Amino acid sequence: MNKHLLLGVPNIDHQHDELLRSLQHLLAAGKCDEGFSEVISRLTIQIHDHFQSEERFMAGLALPPEMMREHEREHSRIIEELTQMHLDTMAGLRLSFEDIIGHFVSYISQHVIEFDLRLKPYIAQPA
Ligand SMILES: [Fe+2]
Ligand SMILES: [Fe+2]
Image (cartoon, rainbow, N blue to C red; front, side, top):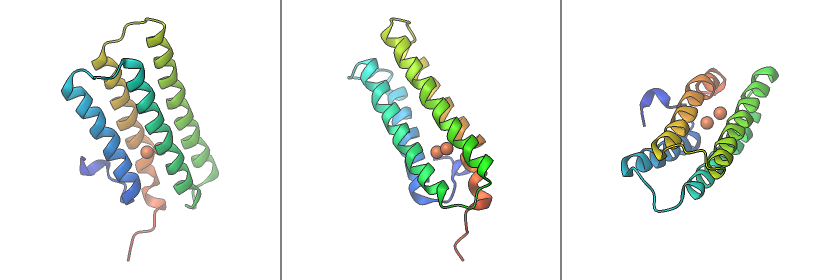
């Protein structure tokens, strides 16, 4: 993974890496053996699980309460957007496979840059 996206917390970095890797993999394949709906569900669940583990991690940091709330709100917003995209797809609104995966990539990488990396100053550096 691009080292500029690393937070320095191994399990969080690993989860970001896994997510971005599976998206790159899908993009490179240009298609999937599963249906659209299955791929979107699987990715949304993976992202949801990641957000939960990140929120547990954040709870152990001395973050300003407003920062914590905003970050959690942003996680919920992303899950809502992805769920909406899923509903649109099921309703027959045709997004291409590349568009769907592209949306996932931009949600994730933008979120890592705009929210996750801002946790850095609150993470104790190993001596
Ligand atoms: Fe986050
Ligand atoms: Fe994250």
